[in-house]
Each structure stands twice: as C-alpha cells, then as structure tokens.
Length: 433
Image (cartoon, rainbow, N blue to C red):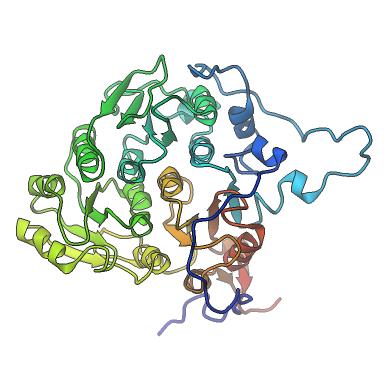
C-alpha cells in the first residue's frame, strides 16, 4: 500500500493538554492602529486597506465608481520616534505569515467587508460582484442560509446591514465593490434579508420572512429561481446550535446546496415544505443526534429524500467531519495536502457566514473551528497535522496549504495563528538535501 506523502512528517509542537469549555469572550479594548485596519488582511493588496479606510462615501450612500487608490507604505512615526517600524506595525505576524492570512476585524461588519474585498479586489469591472447580500448582525441563521447566494453563477458576498442603518465598513466596501447587477442576478444589485437596511441607490430585492427556518426556506426558493435549476443536495442544520451549523455556510457557497434548519426534535413546517418540492434530492444532516434527533432524520426520510448524517461529537470535530466527508459529489473530501482552509471561532456564527466567499474562490477550502483565543484544539491540530504538506526533493513541485484566520487577536491570538502556520508549512520528508 502506498504511504501518504506526509506520513513521515514530524509532529508539530503540542498546544496543551485538556481544553476548557469555551466561553463567550469579553473583548479587550482594540488599539487605535488595529481599529484603523479592522476588517482587512495585512497582505491583501494594499488597495483593500484603501477601500475600507478610503474616504468619499457618506454614511447614507456608497460612492459608485472605481476602487480607492492604493496607500503606499505605512504611517509615519511621530517626529520624536526615530526607530524602524516594528513587526506589529508592519502587520507581521499578527496579520500574515508564510501560510496564513488574517482578516482582522474587531466585529462581523468589518470582517465581512474585508472578506468581500479579498474575494473581489474591485480594481476593474471584471473584479466586482454583480450583487451583494445584506444581513442583519444578529441574524446568524439567515446569514448561514444566505451563504448559498455566494455560489456560482451568482457570487454575492455577504455584508452586514443593521435595520437602523449601514455600518461604515459596509458603506466603504460597497463604494469599492460597486455592484451593478447582471443577468444572473436578474438585474438586482443587493439582496436584503429580513430587516437589513438597503443603501440608497442600489437596485435591491428583499427576502421577507419571519426568521429562522422560514427565512432559510425563502432563501432556498430564491436560490432555485436565480440559479434556474434544482439543487443537487440539501443540507439540514441545527436551528438551536449555531456552532454545529456554521460549517454549512462554506459548503453552500462552494456547492450551491441550500441550507435549511431543524430543531432538536421537530422538523419545521417550512423546512418540510421545501423538502417536498425536491423529494428525490439527497439530504445531509449536519450535527449529532443531540442537535438534530434521529426522529427528525426519519421525518425527512418519510418525505422521500435519501438522508445521511455528517457529525462530530463537538463543534470542532463536527467541522472536521464535514471537511473529510465524501459521498459521491457531496462533501469536501479534504484528506490530503494541497488545500485552503478557513478558521473561525466557534462562537462567531456571523463570521462563518461572512467568510463563505473564501471557500468559493481562491483556494476553495472548508471551514474549521477553534474554541478559544490562545489554544488550538487538539482535534483541529491533529487534522491539520494529518493534511500537512511535505516534499522529498523539489519543493516547487509540492502541494501547499493556506489558512485564512478570521477575527482580531481577541478572537484568535498570534500564538494560535503561529501554530496553524507551522502545521500548514511545507516540510521535507526524505530525499537528499
């Protein structure tokens, strides 16, 4: 039997023994310099910084036209300071390492804006999305379901829009992205879900629903109309356990498979109605039986759908299970080196939805979860070690891994990012030096 190319890789340094139960983090004050580049990744071609920071757009209406011009260099040091820029000022390693890139916003609106501009640099017309999706910051279920609108052929990245107005990062990102609609979007420039505000000047359509399973069903119907074809698969996720539902956003953006919701012991009527429209479409239930019971699985099967469960006992293991899973043309099947990955905190479901464009462009990779700021979970470390790339003779002919890290250092700190970088690093596994 042929041994995998990374079979002889040395184990990365351990990250600790047992893991504490994750708790919702209390954010520390964000330094002014970090706020200034919130939502951006350090190596993201400098115009992204200009797109978020650049002026011109008012709070009420984004400016149409070309993306703001690049910013050269770094801010000048005060006159009394005569030292060279520090690593932190340059953005290393907190924002970028050899194998990781961070979108370091302090809130979901900043992260979503930075991610959208990473996927769509917007320096010319070909680099702009036809449309965007606007989501309220507190509506994680709608956000995860709306990730399907990022899939081909539409490609609509998610941005955050409060019911009371448009956050500044969203306004600035819209000024750069400048969506103009297309035949695939039916001329629509923005899809607003629920009560999300619609900026003046955008041709928009609103997905009206009462939230939860009903909104997800409405988004699935919109997906069918826009894509002009039924889905190849349907993913059903827990309505009350966001950490178990989060990985579905990345897969929906990658595949175009809609995401629906179910309770622990009940299949919502709107979810059941959507499944009845597609009675022969395979259904994949994401999450353990504690989040979606076997009774619910049997309800789905009774409608006529073939049902399979993909699950792990905790959110970290659950995300890895979907990353590894393969059943015909469903599943990432990422069990070897040479892939992209996205790492998000398990208590940040809106960030998971906002990060979906990174799984549907560039290095096209699954969403993985970490539980705390400073410790890489044992299960995630083991998985990244298992898919760590290696080479024997020529590193330029090897496969490479790249990891996007989502959130600022309160969410995932530099020590954890550095360990992820080490696990993603190409390593020699034999051959003559």
